[in-house]
Image 1 (tube, protein in one colour):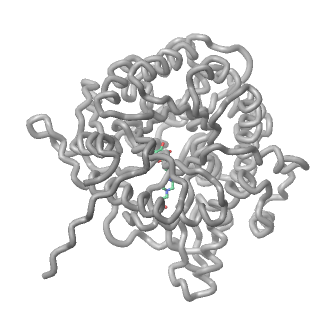
Image 2 (tube, protein in one colour):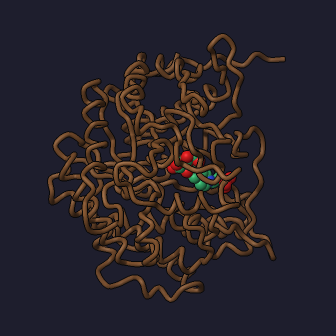
Image 3 (tube, helix red, strand yellow):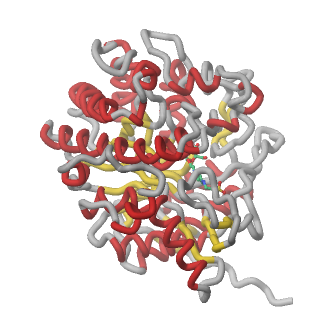
Length: 460
Ligand code: GBH
C-alpha cells in the first residue's frame, strides 16, 4: 500500500475575504414580530406536506433576538465578513407601499454590532422570502414584482448605505424560478415550466433595475449570487451527451450569466425554451436593463452534475425542457443531501467563468456540507467530514487562483445549523451546532478549524 502524500500548506492572497453566510428566513424566527408581514415561505411551510415534518421558520435559530450573541460568536471565529439577507416582508409587509421602520431598525442594529466587532456586513436583499401579497399578484411571474424589488432595494440602501459596502441583489434566482415555479419543491410551490421561465426573466430584470437604482444612490460594490450547475457530458466523446450538457448549461447557467454579463440571452437558449413559452415577457430594452456593471459575482457551489442523452428520460423537473436528458446519480462520496463531493469540479467551474466572462471578480458566497448530527462528547462536536469537505474545496479555490481566476473571498455555508428549506431542521449545514430546544450554540470542530484557517490566511 502506498502512503498518500500529505497535502502541502497553502496561503491565500493578502486581503482575501473570509466569511460565513446565513439567510433571514433560515435563522431569524420572530415571524410575527415588529410588524413583519407574511412571506411565501411562511405560507409554504405552514402548508402540510411541503416541508419535512411540518417544520417552519417561526422560531428557527431565534437570531432576531440573539443577534448580539451571534455576532460575538462570529468575532470569536475571527470572521472578516458576514453575509446575511434582509427579509423584504420586515421592511415592506405588503411588498410595496408603507415602510415598517421596526424592520429596518433590526438590520441597523445588526449592522452596527458587526461593525463594532470589525466584521464587514455583506447584504443580500433577497434570499427567497417574497412578501405573500406580491405572490398573490403573480409573484415572480409578474413584471411588477421586479419593479417593486427595485423600490425595496432603495429603501434598505437609504437606511444602511452609509455603513454597508457590498449589496447583493438576489441569491440564486435559479432556485427562486425553477424550484419555486418549475418543480414546486420550494415556495410558492407552483409547477409550471412556462411560469418558471417568466420568473427567470423577471428575476434578471429585478436585479438590473435594483442594481441601476443602487448605483445611482451611490452603492459602491454591487453583486448578485448565482448557483451555477457545473455540468459535464457523461461521455465526453459522445456528441449527444455533449449536446445534453449544452442544453442544461443553457437553461441553468447561460440564461442568467449572459444577460447579466454580456447583455443578451443566448440564441440557442431562446430557441430551446421557445418550445415551452412564447417569450412575450421579454420586452425591447430589457436585456440592456439587466446588463448593469457588476463589481463582484457571487458563486454558490456544492456539487457537480453529469448528464447524458437518453431517449425517453423524463429529464429533471427543475430544468425546463430537459426531457430526453438523464442526470447521473451521485458516484463516490456524498454529503447528507446525497450531493456528490468532487472538489475539482469547483476549479473547473471557476476557470470556466473566468474564460467565458473575462474580467469578472468572483466571490464564493456559499460552500459547505450537511452531515447528520454528531453527538457532542465533553462539549465537542466532531465533524471531520465537514472539515475535509471545506479543506478540499478551499484547495480547489487556491488552484483557481493559480489559474488566474480573480477570486476575492470565501463564505462558509453556513455559520450555524438552520432551517434547510424543504428539508426543515433535519439537514445541518452549520459550522456551529444549534440545539433547537435550548437555542444553545456550540462550535463544531469545523468552526475551530476554520478559525485557524482564517488566522493563517491559508491551510496547513
Ligand atoms: C443554497 O441552495 C441556498 O442558497 C441556501 O439557502 C441553502 O441552505 C444551501 O444552498 C444548502 O442547500 O439536487 O443533486 O442535482 C443550493 C441549492 C444545491 C440547488 C444543489 C441545486 C443541485 C444538486 N442547490 N442542487 S442535485
